[in-house]
Amino acid sequence: MPSSGDDLFTREDPIFENKELLEINHLPEEGRIVGRDDEISDLANAVNPAIFGQSPSNLLIYGKTGTGKSLCAKHISAQLVRVAKEEGVTAKFAYVDCAQDNTETQAVQTIADSLNDPEVTTIKIPDKGLSTSTYYKRLWKVLDSQYDVVLVILDEVDKLDDDDILMQLSRAGEAGKLTDCKIGVIGISNKIKYKDRMDERVKSSLCEREFVFPPYDANQLRDIMQARSDAFKNGVLEPSVIPRAAALAAREHGDARKAIDILRYAGEIAQSNGSKTVREEFVVQARERAETDRFRELIRGSTPHSRYVLQALAVLSLNRPDEDGFRTTKIFDVYEEICRQEGSDTLSLRRVRDLLKEHAFLDIIEQSRHSGGSAEGSYTEHQLLEDPDVVRKVLVETDEA
DNA sequence: CTTCCACTGGAAAGACAGGTAG
DNA sequence: CTACCTGTCTTTCCAGTGGAAG
Image 1 (cartoon, rainbow, N blue to C red):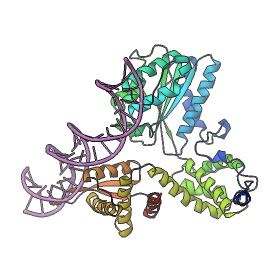
Image 2 (image 1 turned 135 degrees about the vertical axis):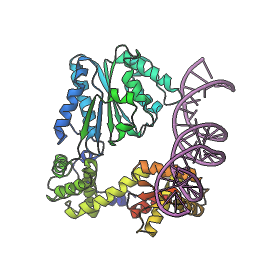
Image 3 (image 1 turned 180 degrees about the vertical axis):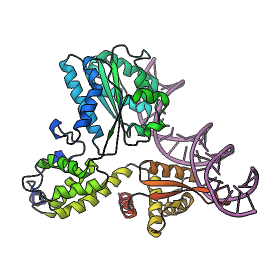
Image 4 (image 1 turned 120 degrees about the vertical axis):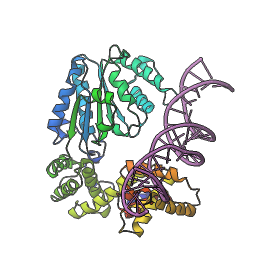
């Protein structure tokens, strides 16, 4: 039935000209990074010695999500590699997302693997199965045999469950593990408190320079979106769309990633509505869709029980909208009920406590400690940070899938 | 200052999965 | 094949914790 299939698809995209510009991991070229000029030149200054084959400073970058931290770090690293090459210095950078590679071993593995060129070094870096120290040994070998300078970007370092890798990297030179190669570490964190948790020894070596990236304001967000507006066909964006989206995004923490998401969704909504232009009213819908999508992404890959726990809290929040916190035991009761309905075994209370803590870590819920006072014990209360309706909707829909 | 209680969270341990090295 | 590696998920045990009332 090729003829009916023909009607299903639009042959020419009426809205988007170049949609990749609105994809999340799209790395804009130099001219497109907006509003971070000072930060970029500061960063450049700090890593500059690497160009002459000397040790770059270790840096720590703070800032909320979507403030351009990773973007600038990658940008500056790529530039550095380019300039160093012109000076005859072999440099490379490795990017590690610590939210994914959250153990020491995995992080070392990722670094080694992304820097290793097996053709040159004849070293194999298997995915798993080796001891941590073996991975380190191979990494040092790779570095010494291939490079003069290496930059390691550790994104979301706070997600790392161990500081050891920071220690190892920052002291590799001193400890004689490396003879030729110099390492610079760029840590990126969105939790300002992260530094307090750090080991004293790590702190002194990692935090040679610190940078704080402020959130974007509405004007900058507008410029950012403007810079990417040629993702759309000429004349498709109505003039009020970008200012409106910028205002919405600025009010909610100035997250550029969210702003661009909103813009993309607005385009998609226009597309599915068959509208020829992207109208301002689509922006509001787009924001809702961005919210549910973000949450879906957040709980993607979580275990069924992890979701039941969240569902229990959502049910409680919907039943008692006036209460703003629920005890662990209360949530556990509802959770047991949900398990019964699903025909699933219940986990222990202890385990559920840990699951709740994991959700708190991902900023899905908020926990607060209370005491009942006289012979009433102390307890923790949990509160959803997302809209309970959104939570339940997403949970129910992933349940069916 | 002590007592009381409901709950907290660290620690240890086991089962299991998925891998390397020789 | 065996020895060994890390990582995940879970349970069991138990020594705290906080703060109002006594």
